[in-house]
Length: 221
Picture 1 (spheres, rainbow, N blue to C red):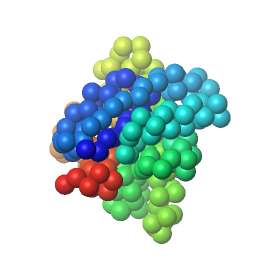
Picture 2: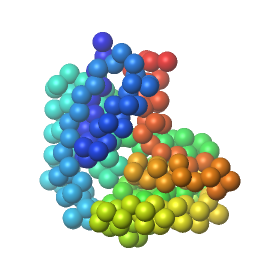
Picture 3: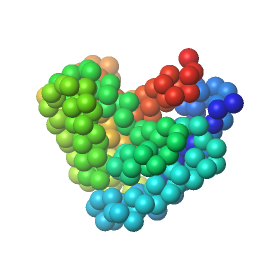
Picture 4: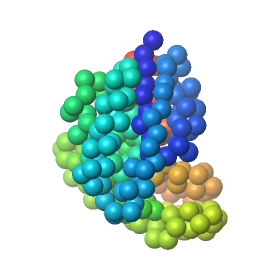
């Protein structure tokens, strides 16, 4: 039996990915490594610092040592550290947003990326740009930060957060072919939009990553 290791920067993502594993990876064992100090440090410093990146790499290496046949890291803000770790491991190490970026590149030339944190927006936009270059395709990336939405959510005002994100999504839809959600927490806002309001495809990384992982790395159907 194969084993999938998750590395998270928030415990709230554990049940989400466990449910997705049941759907896409039946019969595969999973385990979780969680360290929310990583994302807290990134937010506090405004970027991924070298010492934090080093800790990310150590967590990923620990997942390999624990017996993972593949490792999925579920935070977009630490993407560069994930790519570094991949060069140091003998098992596949996957960014949660890579499959989503690849799908978006195939879907259109004008690609929107939306986030409530600048520390997530920049790494996701950068990934889309690099994946497009690898695919030999020219794209126009339109990044949109929902300023104040994250703070509203952290202060307990989920309704304000959702309203701000929904408004930003509708505005972005006017100029793009597809939208990427840089944070999985924004997916619930999309679910609240009507079919008529979803004028372009809106992609969330968790289900896309798990479906791609099942096909590519763990040979599941």
